[in-house]
View 1 (cartoon, rainbow, N blue to C red):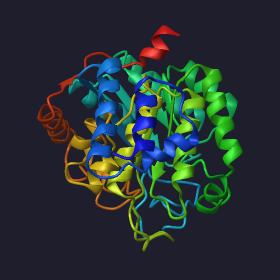
View 2: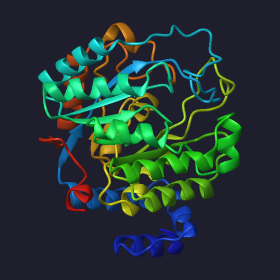
View 3: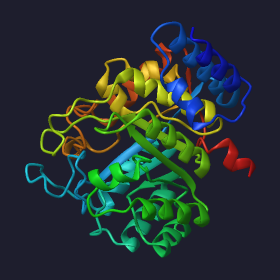
Length: 351
């Protein structure tokens, strides 16, 4: 084991602050002993702070319309080959009811940035889901105004996921034309001020991304003090400008996840659907590198195949019951148990 790597790993094991250079050294962990020791440390921190349970979040992808034109996303507005859909409030409520009946205690309402759904409509979704059962409701609907974030929170939304995508501002602007990195961070600040449990996150393997910018991603997540961080691989979509670019490296995704766990011991970290798409046992391995959440798809099957951020998404052909059984089997395979309750952040509950 390299002496520099060993020194930084020991520093990390003592929960001492890590510099950007320290993080880069951990991200450079070589296959074999270095990676094994990094993953072992991350997993021990996960056990200490979250135990051996895995929290489930049921995702309803209620619209695949998007006003943005991001180069990496199949939902981009310039993609004319995708079949667009919008679920009605009643269809969303019905899907949420089915998920609650299957045992889910968190419902995630996710869409492209679709202003067709005004704030009152989304507030209606939230309040009607809350009438079924007092589940946690997470929103993942992109950038809205400060006033709208407050209204959605007052309607009962508990959490909000807004990924910063990449900490490299130039790369952000290049891959997300017409959007602004500073405003993205401003929205995350507004969410914090509104009282949400806040989630953010980034992609691994974007073209032009460096280990230094990945280190900055993790430091931004720490600075934001997020309750959840979604870290997954870039997977190219054939109908985007990045169609021919290689997907993110599986091992680098795992190393980024592990380092994030070390710096964010209390945050919930999902074993993402994307990592399960990139590798057949991706979610199992991610659960052993610091992850403690899985987000099964509970979107009705008639819609879910059209929510194609990237192709061949894991679980696309399953119905919600089949998805749950598959995820339950994955959790049992790695010797973990399903969590009970809403799975609020331990930091949030004690703050």
